[in-house]
Length: 247
Ligand SMILES: Nc1ncnc2c1ncn2[C@@H]1O[C@H](COP(=O)(O)OP(=O)(O)OP(=O)(O)O)[C@@H](O)[C@H]1O
Ligand SMILES: [Mg+2]
Picture 1 (cartoon, rainbow, N blue to C red):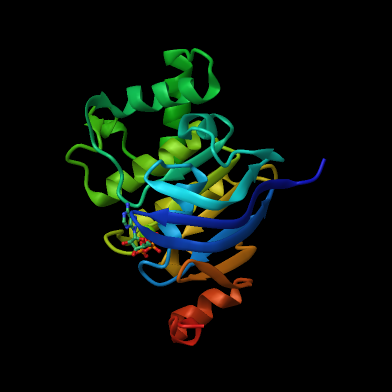
Picture 2: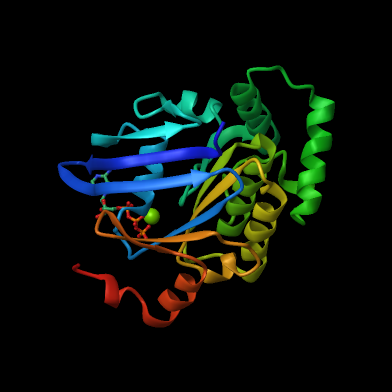
C-alpha cells in the first residue's frame, strides 16, 4: 500500500462554454498539507469543484483517483462518502435546519450509520470548545443570519465532525477577522494527522502562519505553473503573481 490519497492527471475542465482548467496534475499523500494560490479567476475553486464532480463543471479530459480508485465521474455524495470534504468559499444558508441537525444528518450520510444524539452532542461540544465557539448558535437555522466569520466557523466545525480523509478548504480572502482566521487555523491543526490530508485554497498567508505546509502550488490560467515549499508563500506575498502571468 502506498500513501497516495488524491491523484489528478491531466485534468481539463470547462465551465459554461469556456475552458477553465487546462491540464492540472496534482498528487496528495496522506499526512500532507497542500496550498493552492493564484490570481482571481485562475481556476482554484473550479479545481475543488471538479474534484467533488460538481455537475456545473464539465470534465473534458483527465482522471482523478482517490485511494487508488477512479472517482472522476462519481456523484458528489459518493465522493463525500469516500472521505473528501469541501468547505465552500460562500457557505450555503439552509433555513429550517439547525446547525446540530445539519451536522448530525451529514455525518449519518457520510458514515452510513445512525448516530446517537447524546454522543453526538458530546462530540460537538468537544470540537466547539476547541474552536472557542459559543454553543448559543447551534439551535439556529444553518448559516441563516450568521456573520461571515460565524459561517466559516460552522464549516470548520463540519470538517471536524465529518473527519474526512481529505479536507479541501476554499477560503475567502476577505471578511475574516483575526479571530476567525485563528479558528480556521486551529481547526486545521485539530483535524490534521498522519493519515489524512488538507488542501487549502487561499489568498491569506495569515491562515497558513501556524501550519506546517508541505507543498505550495501556483495556479495561473488553469495550470499549475510552479510547485514549491513554504518559501513560495512569502514570495507571492512580496511580489504577487506578476512573475508568473502569461507564461
Ligand atoms: N459556472 C460557471 N460558468 C461560467 N464560468 C465560470 C463558472 N464557474 C467559474 N467560471 C469562470 O471560471 C474562471 C475560474 O473561476 P474560479 O472560481 O475557479 O477562480 P478562482 O481561482 O477560484 O478565483 P478567486 O480567487 O477569485 O476565488 C473564472 O473566469 C470564472 O468566471
Ligand atoms: Mg475561488
